[in-house]
Length: 209
Image (cartoon, rainbow, N blue to C red; front, side, top):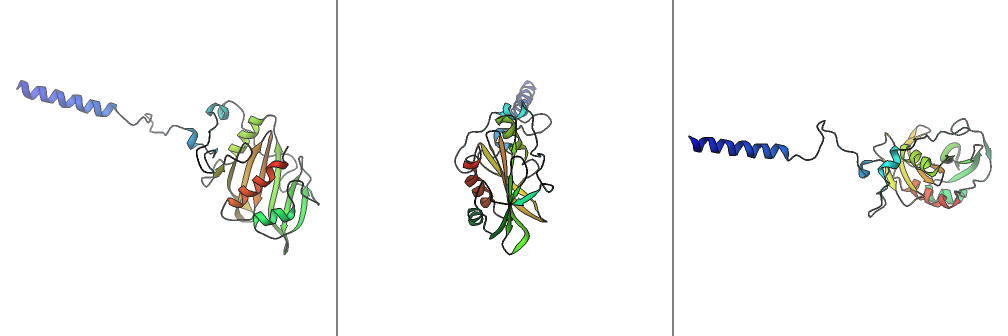
């Protein structure tokens, strides 16, 4: 009888040990937020990249990219884009470019139209300014919220994300990158892949002050 009770005690201790050695998830079963799970995308582009300190994203405001004078209501005039030439844009984006307009926003933006359809937009560049580089970085990160298809490249400016948004009724790729206190959005007419948007952003970075 004593042998039976002893065996039962050993079994209970073994079960208790199994239950206390869990996988580290919290009682609610949620997955802890880590640097690799945030939509910063700073691990993209091949190889291991340094991730931003978690406190950076939570200790400062997350401003949006909406600035006065941008978007559909921005007045545009014929002109030359100060960030990239029409020919260079066409070579990277993949569509022939006809007319180019300058968006009368602050800072100015650019819009590129298809050579054989003056109403079809093949690309757009807009720039937003923020009070600090941290605010700009956070706005870039926040722009990818709600986009599970997001891709990233830590080698463009302070970091860049690319995801799909509607452009004249079609879902196409755009790249958003931060540099200093600026956040630049580069839109393309390409439905896939994101590479064109990333390459355009990389070509534009030196022009952003």
